[in-house]
Image 1 (cartoon, rainbow, N blue to C red):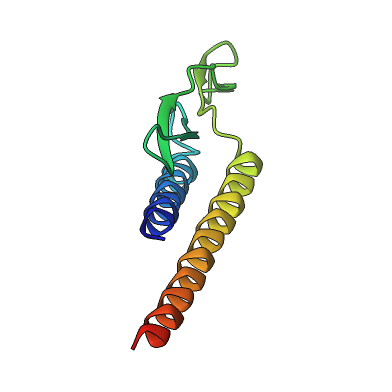
Image 2 (cartoon, rainbow, N blue to C red):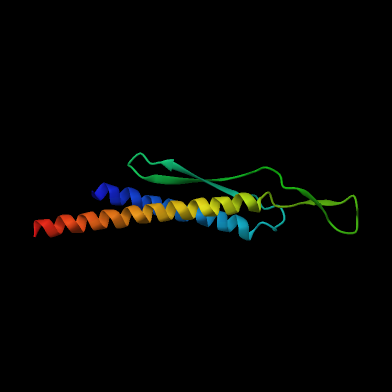
Length: 116
């Protein structure tokens, strides 16, 4: 029972870290030369999940600098549509793990009521 709590808590923490990475990417979507942070969830060897953060080194689009038509600057490689999807996935992941914690809490409470 306790290992279930630990796994669900690590799931919530993993969801928060992935949500934080997406928020960081969205906040910097219009920053010149910004490279997005990619968060991937991996199964932990002790149960639950861990988050692996890596930087996406793909180049961003070339944008004109202004007056000179032959001068360009590199934009961010963040795709907002993709980040919004990651945000929704992370939120659902957090909610699912919180529901698991609530259910385990209810079951444990019922078991303790039976013992008393």
